[in-house]
Length: 167
Image (cartoon, rainbow, N blue to C red):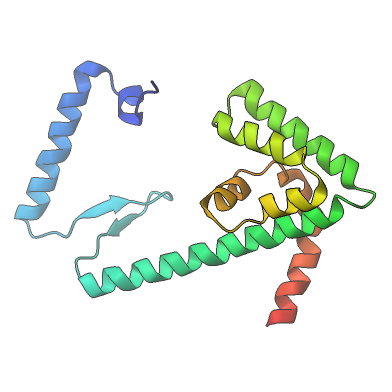
């Protein structure tokens, strides 16, 4: 079983003390009437929103943004799949297999992605395309953990042009 970040940073003897300190800090902030806060990835403080309508609006915006990102990933993979039939196809496949081997060798991702990407890359082109472009949770997560990162620079100009054509 893997250790939590708290377990990695703090020894077992300090975990209870750290949890208590956080709980006391929250209680003091509540007593002072301060809104709850959290630290963002950049290290800046952000305040939690208490307005239910605002929370729903923020959630809708986040869901929409995620959909746009997922569609961009899907389109990027669609372009890569087109290149697999061309002169760059062997290089793209080779690099994808090298990436998968690296994931497995260095335990960089869960085995499911290693297994599925190897299985998908062994499929005939039409089946590979259907698997990679599927719109369900598996398709989304597989594209987010793609062995084609090395090839995305090959399709970026085409994606930029496609975005300009839609605008």
